[in-house]
Length: 183
Image (cartoon, rainbow, N blue to C red; front, side, top):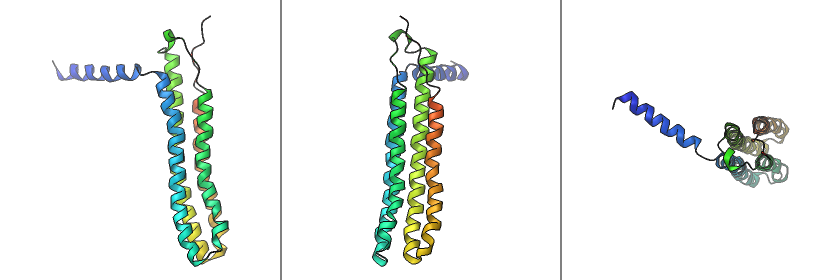
């Protein structure tokens, strides 16, 4: 067997395997990634912010209450993932088994999968970004309280990254249309 024939056979095997995975499986994985990775990003951001906040509060206890806004921004990242997961869940429709592998079904499954991946990883990066900025906000506020509002504005811009991911995810999930049921 020649080398090009073996490569063609292997490529056809992978393509065949990916096409034979149910679109509902891709949809479920996308929804799970949207919520799971978003919560991971929020937890990571809260970990980064919280540890710095507690450490800086030893020197300046006054910063504890006003710097909790950074933790709230991190928690919003998890809420973005929950909202998108609910939106993606409403996109699922039942299809007759004869049309489960129809191109329209595959496209809908891939659209929900891609939407979940984008939202999940955008929120992961957003959570880390907001956590790092929140950490620097707590540390700088402990040193000089006039810096709080200035760094908070930067933190708001960092939090907007998660919203961009949500918007792109919603736009991509609009492509999910399942085949019409035949009566």
